[in-house]
Every structure is written in structure tokens, then in C-alpha cells.
Amino acid sequence: MPNVAVIGAQWGDEGKGKVVDWLASRADVVVRFQGGHNAGHTLVVGNQTYKLSLLPSGLVRGKLGVIGNGVVIDPVALLAEMDRVRAQGLDVTPDNLRIAENAILILPVHGALDRAREAARGDRKIGTTGRGIGPAYEDKVARRAIRVCDLAEPDVLSDKLDELLLHHNTLLTGLGAQPAQKQELLDLLLGLAPRLLPHVEAVWERLDEARRAGRRILFEGAQAVMLDVDHGTYPFVTSSNTIAATAAAGSGIGPAVIGFVLGIAKAYSTRVGAGPFPTELHDETGRQLGTRGHEFGTVTGRPRRCGWFDAALVRQAVKVGGIQGLALTKLDVLDGMAELKIGVGYEINGKRLNHLPAGQAAQAAAKPIYETIEGWAGSTRGARSWAALPAQAIKYVRRVEELVETPVTLLSTSPERDDTILMRDPFES
Ligand code: IMP
Image 1 (cartoon, rainbow, N blue to C red):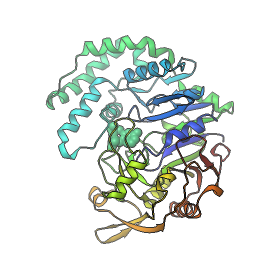
Image 2: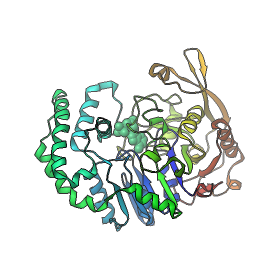
Image 3: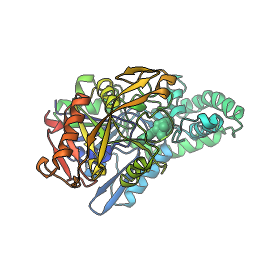
Image 4: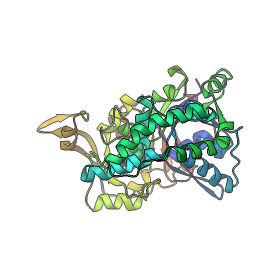
């Protein structure tokens, strides 16, 4: 099976962009299957820097990009992103971007509700990206969402907007926000339709053809396992399933088509937004990790919370996420630190646990149990072979492998695409 799925193994921002870009250059088709424009990564190709949120990264490598049905699409944001990359010289056409006809649309009311609810939560807020992701997925399961295909059926669209607004305007008014005007929304959507519809099709059929023709398909996950709506640190999660299994449901292929599952993890931990983070550091070491790792959110610019690598958490992510190999990123950020710690389990109310349980109070009470490892004096930055790594850095990676019970198949040693040590090609696995 020549296909690969890439997912985050922590709380997002693990450096998926670089790894996905490298894999995309070797794939034929790149598919987004969940999330929306809450995701974001930066790709540097030649002298151009592309900031992508919704567009599958393969596009910048000249590959076919597919937005699957599991994605929630803000049409205004998508068209703006398409215009932005076009202005940088990248041609986005119906030939290289296909959009699932059954994907869900994010409307301005979703963003308004997301932000109004966060404001109402006060200091108990989740720290969402405010982009309407949660409310759009809620509408999907409540069966009142507007889907991409509705743009081609104005009468259906008009009726569906009545139902949707009955719900949303009641909520928005209750939260003290402005209600939405139906005609305004209808005009907006019908105005955008001619630009979107040429890209729209039954993508499951195209993916099936690609699979049968032996094309290499890369499934590009967004967010990460610990933000998964079932398996993450609920309720401080995103509103989709982020595990590899979602690649099947979110694009319309069978589970056997997913192929090799590559998880991405940083050599330490970060998190944006609120929620439990047992190995978080509030001291100088935490600040040092943030500064050296340039830890600011791509989408929101918020500073990321930083802490030690949590092997117990990543082991859990490996198991529920279906991860078969790990890409370890940003090892160079640990260069020169005298002593490193790795979380190996938790103490929760006097009991030791080797995994993070589901209970919210238990997660908040989890104190990390650490193993201490000697650091290394030399540099790992830019290393392209094991031989170029300090012996102690190799020891760190080997210990990570043991603790997470998964081989590190790829090591990334700088933001540059070629500063990578490849142990096993995921497409050949
Ligand atoms: P939402 O996805 O905007 O609803 O946000 C829910 C949680 O997921 C918040 O803690 C966000 O910070 C987090 N989140 C969403 N997308 C990303 C991402 O791409 N990287 C890291 N965190 C994210």
C-alpha cells in the first residue's frame, strides 16, 4: 500500500508542515480530511513563503489537492487563501484543487457564535481559534448544516438557511450578539458559488480511481491526537476526530487505503489554548524552549505554552491514533541544555498511572513523573545523518522510542526541508 497518513501526536504545531511538504513532493495526491482554517502552516519553497490553512500542501508542489468531506470549509477564507497564493504565482484551478460536494460550510454565524460563547465562558474558556469550527461541526451532526453541494441548489439552500438561522439567531440573541440576516447570507453564498462550484465533485470517486491506478495518496491531518474530540483532553479539544482512522471517513475511502500512519511529535511539548498540560514549565526553562523554538501560533499568533516531552501522552496518542512510526521534530531546540526531562507517567491523587485518564478533574490533577536524562553540548541543528549527532542526542531519541513503544522513522533537525534524517521511507513501509 503506497499511501501515508500524517497526524500530530501531541496538541498540534508539531512541525507537520515541513514533514507534510517533504512527503507531498513524493506523493501524487494530497488530501485534507478534517479540521478547517483553524490549522495553519508555513511552507518555504524557493524564495516564496506560503501560509496555508485550508489548501492541501501538495498544491505548492504541483500535486492534486483534495479537500475531503470531513473538512469544514469557510468559503470566504478559502477563496481569500486561493487569491493569496495565486498572487504569489501559484495557479489554483479546478484541475489541481477538488472539493468534496458533501463537505460542510462554515458561515459567518458560526464564527460569531464561537466567539460569543468563548466570551461568555470567561475564565473557563477553551481558547478556540474563534473561526467557527465547533459550531459548524455541531450543525453537521444536528443535520442542519449547509453543504458545498447546496450552493448548486438555491431553493434548497434558501430553505436550509431558514432552519439554520432559527437555531443560530436564537442563540446569538441570547448571548447578546447580533442576529444574522438571511438575505445577506443567501446573497453571500450565491455570490461565491460560481467560483467554488467548478472545483466540486464526488472526491471519493476520484480517490478510488487514484488508488486503483496505484497513485500515492498522502492524507494530511490537522491539529493532533490530544485535541481529538473523543480521545483528547476533552472539553479542551477541537471538534473533529484527528486520529488516522478519520482519514477514511473524512475522505470517503476504506480504512485499508490509509496505509502507513506517521505521527509527528516535537522533542518537547507545546500547547496553545487552555486545558491540561502535565509537563508544562512555568519557569525559565519553559521560556527558553518558547524563545528558541519560536513558539507562537501560526493562526492566532498566541504564544504557545511549553514543557518537557511527555512520553506517556505520546504513547497514548500512538495507540489511539494508530501511529506506526514517529517523526521527531525540533530536536535542535534542546541543544546545549545540561539536563533534560521526559514525562513517563502521572501521579494523580496519590496513585501512579501510565496514561492520562478521561476525567477532567483527574487530568487537571495529573502531576508528571519524570525521568532525567543528561543533555548534550554539541549541536544537532542541520544534521543529516546519525553520525552527525552528538552521542547523547542519539541516546535521547532511543529513549523516546522505547518509552513511546514506536520507532522514530524520521528526525527533523531544522526548519529546512533537507535537514532531515530518514530512517524509513513511509511510502515504502
Ligand atoms: P478550535 O479548533 O478553533 O475549536 O479550537 C479548539 C482548541 O484546539 C483550542 O485549544 C485551539 O487552540 C486548538 N487548535 C485548533 N487548531 C489548532 C492547530 O492547528 N494547532 C494547534 N492547536 C489548535
